[in-house]
Length: 244
Image (cartoon, rainbow, N blue to C red; front, side, top):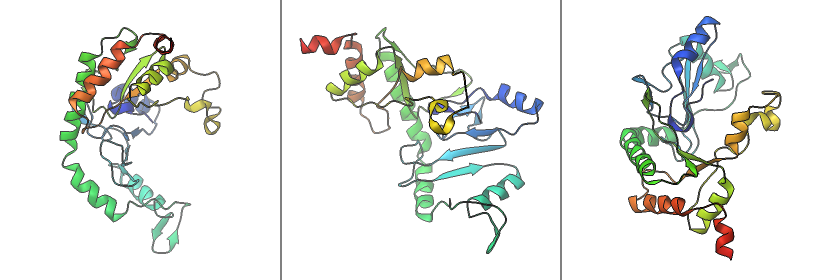
């Protein structure tokens, strides 16, 4: 299950080749990548199945929760339809232990309208990310990489900083809210124990350094410049210096 994290596709061709060699199914997690492309192919369309989230904060979000699965495989589609509706195969006949996970009509209607604006909103996200890239000049910051094989839709703009927590507090004092996606590696959570018994060194390091900056289509240019200015002024120990 490759994850198209933060709005950029994973390198799918090698993944699909490995899966083919070992007769494995591939499910794309495209929940943060609505509209992203990989070598002119859309996120979610390259593997056996693609999954999308319509949580309100996603690039394409409803006014409540929801999601979608896409596939070219008729048998997988039928099984997914059954699982989302209590495992039902026909009226009052249940062959699987399914769940209640139907997208309600109001959310579908809202998403159908918003879908027309997805490319416009994604272009604005790219513009915002480009402004961050050009205006953040602090050598304490590592900016997100943009791979050449596709388009990035910047669901999130995630920087890395060795002094992440201090930077976050500094920005908060400047009236700038940020978030951490994600503070704990999945295998460290109780539900994920055993997934990686020996840990992953890079994952451990990044989880302590990642910081998501404000990014949404309605943010104003002057607000972006203010975030960049605050980051560029940040120095290790800035909070201590202000207290003095």
